[in-house]
Image 1 (cartoon, rainbow, N blue to C red):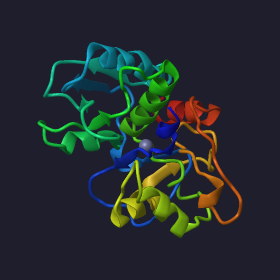
Image 2 (cartoon, protein in one colour):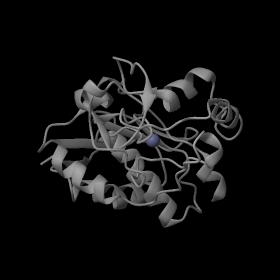
Image 3 (cartoon, rainbow, N blue to C red):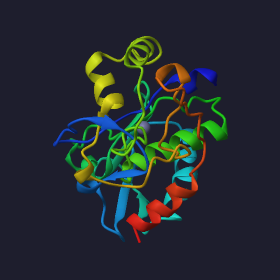
Image 4 (tube, rainbow, N blue to C red):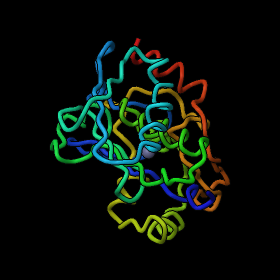
Length: 226
Ligand SMILES: [Zn+2]
């Protein structure tokens, strides 16, 4: 599964576009659900194994947040999950409601038949973090990551990501405006932090592969959805 560690999830939300980029436990205020909301979810495609994994692990968020996940038939649901596109990605929070009903709002391209429970859980918790409004920790406005931009661009423009320059700028270097974000200080252990090799920074900092909700993730989501 080593190749998965090099893949980066792509997350976005609809207008307004973020003006710039960096990350920590942080959430887009305009795309927040209301505490107590029931969020409806459907599967557009996928095997029973894939659906079972999603239903099993996504609940860890609603054990903490005052939100309910309700699985229903497609397409008239808030979140629509596919498994057939490349990569793993999700829209941010309530942005899913403005996505046309015939399109997915979340995709799990990495849940192959031989995926381990550990890897499945990691990516499901991460994508559902986006669905609850969380951004990538490295795009937290308080993040002070000193990127080695040429190295990041070089690595992400090649396989397996093959991102174009605009995608790299949006997903890596744009810091969200702090007035649109509720957040903590940078949490290197967040499930929303992705691995950052030391070659990507100018000051020797790096981040490993986080595979669990951090203590800050847990308290933050409880505070956001009391
Ligand atoms: Zn992500």
